Length: 265
Image (cartoon, rainbow, N blue to C red; front, side, top):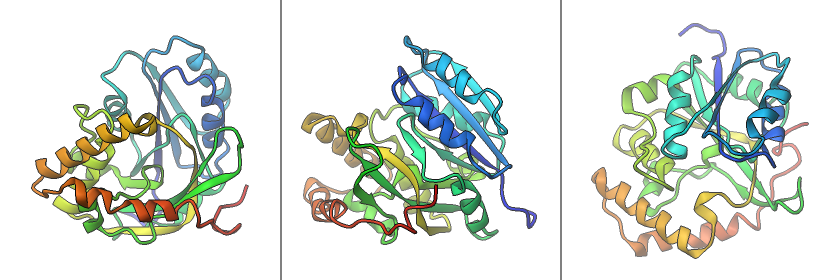
């Protein structure tokens, strides 16, 4: 690869996301980095999601593609987006998440070097009733690949990987409903260890919730899939190991990022 900072593709998957998609798309449109494309993969929404996306992205300085068709779930949609991506680096930004500042992608691109395959930034999570007020700080600072054996993964919204990794190691597995991102990280970090680095800035703001956080039932199903993924790839674990991650997750609700680390608007 040459010395030029890498081009970056952001993939946003959505379905009936009219309430939140405008802010997500706007946060990508406002990026100062020029080597950027945005791929919006809609699951044939029944509300006004597609119309909002078209309106907000109109006139964007970045290459934008919109696909709206039925799929087999969010990980199938992510696969489609990654297959469409043309950039050196790919990231997922969900339809209720936003990039932390207008310079986020420029800062990430500048931090990539030729020996880095994955860059992982930090994420703040907000209560949807109080926009802009973080209630959880999800950092990748202490992430180690062995943490995955306990069900601990770095923040998916802060995960930026070279596209060739997806081509070599495979994309998201649509047979998973809730833990497809975890299964992919087992392959990228444990089974076929990549060269990664922590990027010490908040790169995304997430709203609390999501498919894997809808009550105790979804959390049980999520962890069942986590165990399935570990066993599938030869890293057997158990419920006791998964429960040992709880104290660390609780600390994320106490530690707050500094103003500088939270990014600049």
